[in-house]
Length: 335
Image 1 (cartoon, one colour):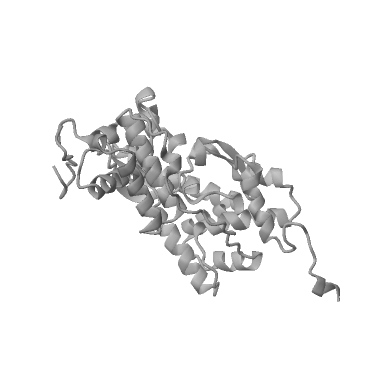
Image 2 (cartoon, helix red, strand yellow):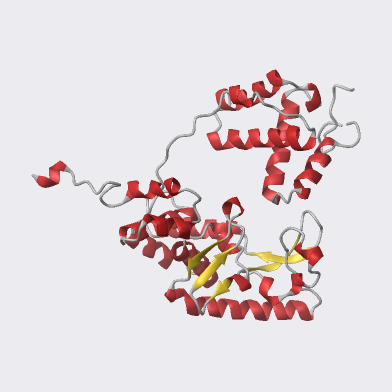
């Protein structure tokens, strides 16, 4: 076997057929991994191959895998989550594509994951931030992140069929970890959401009239239900202003609002509101959880609304409550 690997990506090295990265990509798609995960895994596998002089991974053993992953932690000083992602990519490459088990990976030097407390806004800071978002649609998105405890992409990927305004609830489909959950719709957002959905329906009807109107469907639903892609219920609540090309299939569809628009809007609003804390859309989810606990809701209820598999994950918010996780009063305040 040649000791060179054909990467067959633009500007990179040239391989023996079938091309390795194509095999990885096909396997990822067969397993229904997201496009983001596909891009990340392909990137890490390419870095791994180039780190070892473009040799084929079959020729690389324990020492070479350890050297690459250890270098990430020791030389590049990457975060624990970054090294874990690289490790997951190599596990997929060897286990799923090459059929080689790596039982000795526990011996690899791993980046230490620091314990971080979440950044949380006060109620006044949250309201001040929301007041600085002038775009009505983005204001509604950001309000939902705080009012319903949604992750950014959970909010942007909302489908019409999963918003039940009569019951003031949202069904979050395929959230983190592939789990579904139910959360609330704030009463103050019912009317704006109803108006947004009506606006989206007009856009969809116009698209259908022009011979378009399809939306991306998860997994193999597009094959199983050929007409579902144009069905009203499957449309995004927050559709993009224009059409875009699917990087996998090449289909031209209307996607959801770009998350970068929301990220930029939140950052700009925080600056205008004079908030000195680092603020991102996810900060609003942290604030949602903390404010519920401050309001006296039990931690199991908050766990369910957030979709945490383990209550220990939700417990992190007890450390940022006004009185701390144990409700302790400082001795200075007793003087």
